[in-house]
Length: 312
Ligand code: NDP
Image 1 (spheres, rainbow, N blue to C red):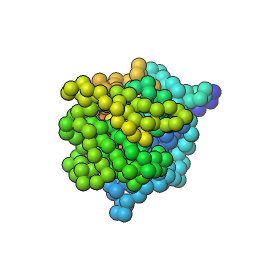
Image 2 (image 1 turned 135 degrees about the vertical axis):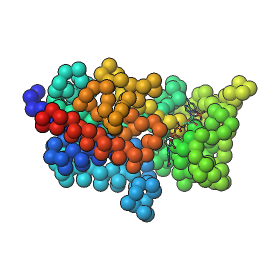
Image 3 (image 1 turned 90 degrees about the horizontal axis):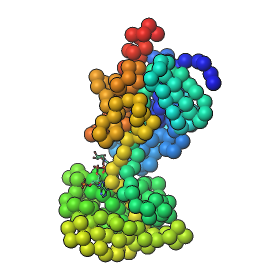
Image 4 (image 1 turned 30 degrees about the vertical axis):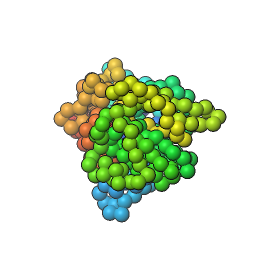
């Protein structure tokens, strides 16, 4: 265990975490950034075209954008660790962060752990994950060439994934539990106009049929109005039903809202002075790369102000 106390420790490596690192490093605060091992770079690393990040008029691939973020953070002296943080203690100061058995001390902490894809909660979904069930069209779409697919959900993610999957699939059926979509009008229209996409309304996936050896062969769909259950053949299922914040680590340490998002006020301040949160882990409304990046900047500036107030 090193007794060195770092000025800023950043947990999370998406748009918010890396932007916080750029600002903190340029303020000469030598941030330590824990990238995590499950999805370093965050949600943009499982996206293809990003067309709405300012400064890239032709668009840019998500993983390429995150590689640039990281390069910029490292250029100014951020130390990035490809490690998961397993435990935090914000009840004593300096704060304690434990990652893979090693303890680190921080005068301030910026949390940017983001959010993760929500799942239906079926046993068959868990068993067949990676064997015909996926939550990431960009990562796995290629493996479903020539198949008929089902996408579950009615939001922008479901529309985006369905449209993307038509590059590989013969047909994509969107299964939605209501009779109208939650997705933005422009994304709805794009999906409605795609001849390879159709919709099954008022329906829930009750069971995913298949084996680990042979993959998915169909789903049982329940009409939520009539309760009638029918089998629909398909070669793969993509779950696109939203996200949950990655806040398990902070449950008894910080105030969280009812949905588990970190509560922030006056910028990025959490319920513990010196601990700041930015990006999707505290924002379930905007959730854009650019808003996450902006909030990473706010996190770093707030942390800098906190350190200054303590005389650092
Ligand atoms: P949303 O929360 O917007 O939508 C989730 C969808 O999944 C809803 O239609 C919801 O149904 C359905 N759903 C939720 N839980 C279940 C369940 N257990 N079983 C069946 N269906 C379920 O999440 P998204 O990920 O689609 O979008 C999140 C945010 O990200 C939004 O703000 C969106 O605009 C943004 N986004 C933007 C994109 C872009 O601009 N390129 C791309 C992707 C996302 P119901 O409608 O009944 O609640």
